Length: 452
Image 1 (cartoon, helix red, strand yellow):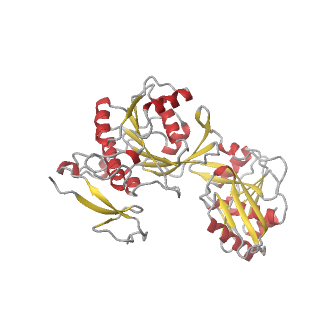
Image 2: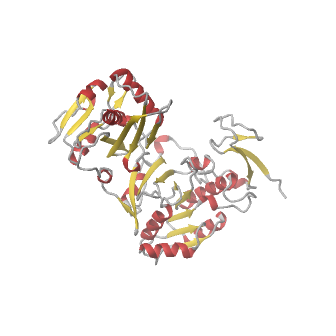
Image 3: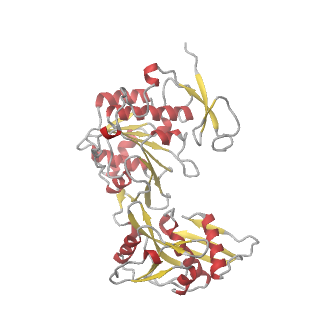
């Protein structure tokens, strides 16, 4: 009997070590190194990589075929947008999300729709076949052609899939999959790592698109070793609170398209429904002007998105006033407040500051700086801002207003939704007048405050 080999791997960065130690020297994380039992593989298996190549040869770069990668639609335009235009045959896709976000519901809708014209295999490891069938019947999905399999052994799944030859296969979920030659329990680092690598090789070798469902940890990151995200082609995250009917699908990694694309879905009694115009659902504001509320224009992937941001400033009886943010980075709010004090003379050191992005949207770009400061000043002075005003721009440490990408497209999107006035950086001022909109170009924070 061959001797079982072990390795020690960091769960955060995937670095390998010859023995256990308390701190990972690569990323500096404490208590993140765990033992991984390596499977006993043959010589041929050892040299098969994630790409699944069996007979490699060296060619020149100019000999590479530049033909576009073929894709097929999932039936959901928002899902195809996040993937870069559709599903690529032979790709390995990882979709994560918190419990109850709707991962299984969305994938079941996609698979039932694709099974009408193509072979599709849905592998469930967490739920029974009866539970999946009940959900499909409740949603009114076509169930005649979808092939189902309740199995957790990866070798058995790939063997059956090789016989059925599906075009697309869903693994729900990767955390419950296991390989027979690894002794650790399902969900451990070694099982998740080897199972994902085995499924990725199968996808490449047989040209089958494999979608793996992954769980997330309490901080929102995908559970399991970091190498899991390295070996797959696309990593997308379905985000949304259980008390909010809207879900956002965001791409974190994509070898076949752009990242940071955003798809918006609504959870209904008939399953997940696409939101064709996301800006409309995030702009459900009252008719009356209220202090501390303003609309900004974000740029998500390849399209603009109008989002309302709310600010509340109130006197704090505490020695250390609170800085609470929902949807934005808290450290950036502290920096913007320092810029506001230094270059505009507005002191909020004794005030509690609360910032909220309406609709559960997470702001990851700096174009929301100017809108955030104007909303806070509006709440601090109890002066309402007009509903027809839209603002975007980055604020520098010296109080200057910096330009942001795709300024013209942002203004056109705002004008399409009926906004009549805009405050933008000077470099983003339109060269030609936009019908029905007055654009005020500013270069300093003080000019933006005077323009209110």
